[in-house]
Amino acid sequence: MNTFDLLSMKGKNVLITGGRMMYGLGATLALADAGANIYLASHSEASAKELIDELREKKNVKAKAFAFDLDDVGSIEKLVRDVTEESGQIHAFIHCSRIIPSGGVGIGWDQDFVQLEQSVRINSAASLYLIQLVGEHMKKHKCGAMVLFGSMMGLIAVEKHNYDGNPQMVPGAYSPAYAVDKSGLSAWVRHAASYYGQYGIRVNAVCPGGLQSERTNPVFAEQYSKHTLLGRLANTDDIKGIILLLSSDASAYITGLNIPVDGGYTCI
Amino acid sequence: MSSFMEKFSLCEKKALVISPENPYGKEVTEGLRSAGAEIWLAGENRTDIECKGFFDYERGNPESAEKLEKNVREVMGHVDVVVENGMHTSEKKWEHPFETIQRELEKTHLGMMLTIGHLGHILAEQKNGSIILITDYGALVGYDVQNYIGEEKSFNTDFSVINGFIKGGVVNYARQASNFLAEHGCRCNAIAYAPMHGSCDKEFESAFIRHSQLKRLAYSDDVASAVVFLASDASSYITGITLPVDGGYTAK
Image 1 (cartoon, chains in turn orange, cyan):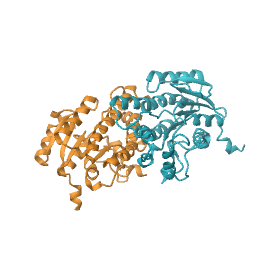
Image 2: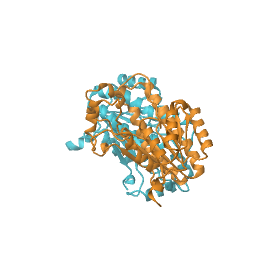
Image 3: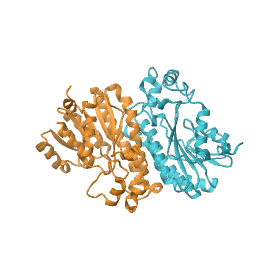
Image 4: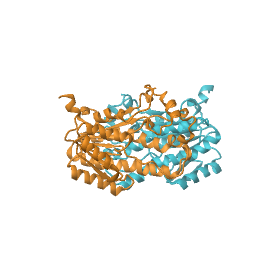
């Protein structure tokens, strides 16, 4: 089969959460470029309108937004129900959504209980529940590709001196809850790939490193970049190729992987 | 005993084992005791494991974690070895309602962060101590469905949607926690055990052994040796690792 046909997402329905910003946006645009019908789970239909219009007009794909809140079990169930009804079948599922826990700021050991609890309940438990519901749907069709967002910070510990001069960044970087959540996800990818394999469902994760944005602190960027082999932070284009590969039939024999997308940061 | 062999000794050290009622808890505790450690336990249910003292501890409850820290300070005085053995779920089958997933993750992951968060304060002040997080080989590889053919009971036990997630969260937490603790002279490591001899159905056992390198399951001495090593000064330059103790199962 022609390689570009394998990579094509034409006629395939993709459910993506958190697909409106940062890495998630890169993923949405890549899938649209490949011709996928995009089912975008977003905070509200209004907030997604601009992107949905762009997908329809510039990428010429079917696109629809669904209001979704990871902190609401009813909303998770409704999302999967609505998207399966609307689309008939979810071929690929990209889970990028997560909440940034609220509560007081605490560093390391002293991370606020509110933050720990929210991270476990919403980022871990609610995500697992959502993925499980999508899995139940895919089992019926005996096929599907799941691409989950892990993180470089689920694979390695924080390099302290990357944050020298930027104490305000330390609490986020030193979150034990984030490390546990992403590390759990990385192992779960293998656990789930093993279970879902018998149903023809593939499960993989991308584990991106730091993303360059307008708000990135230049001192941090410089210190961090020295630890990457390619000498820079990531941009949203960097995620596109791997998302498309893992979502499409081009990776039909790939399952259970965690793929770092980190400029080589975790390999030294 | 040669001076090097003394490094393995836990004589005059105090060890606290959290959730000893779970798998590996008894073997880990007896191992620490046999190396000379004074044994303290904390959990929701008392077991028949002998100990110097027992603290009631409700996993995932912040007040209970705070109380545990207070008890350890006041009753134990200091603690050299902390073993966190709470990464266990007894939920069966793959699919579960949200409430079950949440409850199990609060008992395990949230419980671990609270336990280590609080006891870590004590270790950091002492400027010494070793934390050991107990998990199983599911932290490193997926459980193999082929090993469970004909063993629906074992299959349902290991293949809950929650299980691999629980086991795997330990791996990078050990790295992250070792990072917090290092500047205070303390260490944190994890152990990923294979199933124990006699703990599984026969069919599963022979299937697992077929895929292992040493052609057997773990004996209690295997479980004990690893935890004594990581608890003792014999491993004083080792921190942040997950040590597989699995007869080579994850190495092939």
